Image (cartoon, one colour):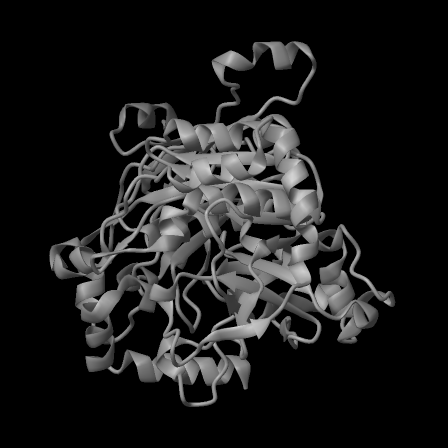
Length: 504
């Protein structure tokens, strides 16, 4: 009876295609690697009739098959919803069209902390790992079929030591201010990609949404053709940039399963991790050029741990001034004296929220600053700035330059400037400084201003409004209005408690 489901409007689809731009035929004839373009369509709705007589709509934003040492299952990714998280999703089952390997869904993302996604694991027979297409049927506990998900197995099969997830490029109008960092988004992207390749990053999963302009295509094309990056494209572009970030970092986690050891999920284009303790980590006076390939294992060894027992490595950030538009970002040498702190923790002697890499085998769900759900018993290693730290190049709009001036000289990354300029010139066949200045004046698609987004309460999901003040992820509420809402509902206090528990 399964064939009858093909006519239902509840069917979902996530399709993948591999393609090259029309003008790259000569490159293909020269046997250059073909760019990998993975297109993921937002899933349609599946209606779940709950025993209490009410309906709940399931709408997966991505579906990713994964097979190998990290597990054999299909991951169905859903935006976090406190209502869904309490419905007892273990009552849902999945199977193929024949129903032979019917299995109960496993659910992640409901653990304590700041959730952004719910992830459903549908176990799948390893012997079907070579299939290109799957149909996943969902059933309730009575065996009634609710709908199906059609998915293409499209993740590249290469194995990597270190992978970086690259979020979409956008310009944010923050409370009416034209933030410098967002207007430099294209410039920052191309520099960031080149820096990480130069220092040993094996591969990038680059995320795009909706309509992508010519400048963005111009930047991505050489990295895709070189096989250095895989593009994951969502045809739907959610209004708010945080929602797109949550989609990206969750999809990237499961696209990296069985294909990477360490994943850098949320390090932004204005953040550069660097090694500050080469003698402690490598036994050498200088930092290896390809340190992204070896540094994470070196940190684990230095801390006296085993990789299999570590879920993540977190590190602090120093804020730096921005250089001129025609200079590489890393050419700036002026930083603040102390590592940055969370905005509402100033004056309390507290560490700010870090950035991190995770061991993909041990992570089940992630937040912007740490692993949210992990294999039981695994731990985070928060390293000292004396071992490694990130340079964070920020606009003056984002911190009080009088209270926290950038008045300390740090020239560490300046030594890379010449090599990176040469790499950019070779890749794009353009004068690097002219190219950077050109990119600095090209602005990506604007995002919904945070002030407007939060003022329009009807844009908030009904489930979130119903949950107030019980459980609010802080990033859904930005700007002054959002901060007031968080304060009124005691969420700052909750986050501070979580922060203390996280970092001791």
